Image 1 (cartoon, helix red, strand yellow):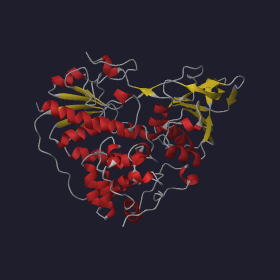
Image 2 (cartoon, one colour):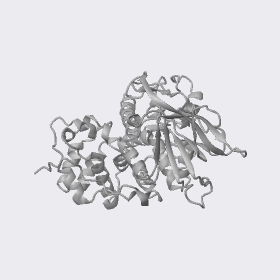
Image 3 (cartoon, one colour):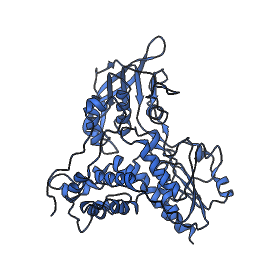
Image 4 (cartoon, one colour):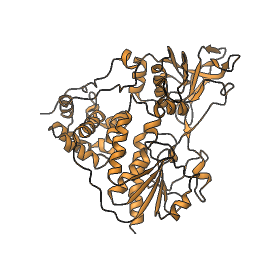
Length: 461
């Protein structure tokens, strides 16, 4: 008997005034009873629109049916056929615009909580699976993957399942990419990321950290070492700034630096080798998920007031609705229709304020969003001692500057011929943020999956 409730089972979570003072995971996850009840809301539609809405084409009705019948390990098995990182995706995917966004139950009521059920199945597996991961027989062909983020790890996992000898080269000292340096612990515990990476290693994937392709070695040298194909999943880690006065003052961070120091280098720990200076009032410029992450981290580091400063209105905020809601619950102050023009410093060159103008929305621009225009006479100053710039990133130029014949566009993104990820260099494929610019984890995973299939076809000729 299907559960015809119009509402999802709510996600248990820490109270806002408790969680905004710690880095423990906010969402606590479904119990088995809640998961079964939620799974029974699925109608097992004939056309399966949710599968079409998933960038990695998980058999969503299939795994939900297993949960509804209490077969949790079998549910994980269904997901694992298509996804190498289910515990990650269940936490950070924007399901509301993808699988859940096209769920039939969402026409009259709330969609099935697909992401929460995926997380439940993955967490159940991680807590209860005691067997060994099967390592496929090698086919003798070597593939190099550049970048141990979601695109690279997905590509590596899919190729390993087919018997390829895959080595992932990562510039940092830990694998995971944005999953470890960008997304905070309270949204994605790093132990979960490590568990997923350990699973890939058990399948035979090798991970070489502290290796910068373009500096330690080049793509041409990878081919000299016997690799038959290369996948570039190096992400988009080069921060952008507004080029306004005062951006070189002490206390101005890029969101990349701030989050890397907090998440990867544990700067929230006072005994860390690189602690972040305690600040009382923080302005985060930008309105995406990264801006929400930075603002919520700043609050947890002890700031009394944290502002989101965004030049468009609240309806135009690009962050997930859930992240915006959580930020508001935790006390983040939203200054929308506000645009910085200068960062003000004191006599010691520390940040003392941010000069802004108020905006109003005019006609739509080329992106289809209404263009913000300045309100005359609206200049004002927000009293802050720290500014975090979160206005986007672009790919690091190191790989393109050291690789002959690799076509890139004016934004520095690698150009690919189609969804396979094939670049202008034979045997070289690319995907994720290195191709699209900053996007989502699941889109990067979808690109890695498509490239793995294309590489397999290329090397099977």
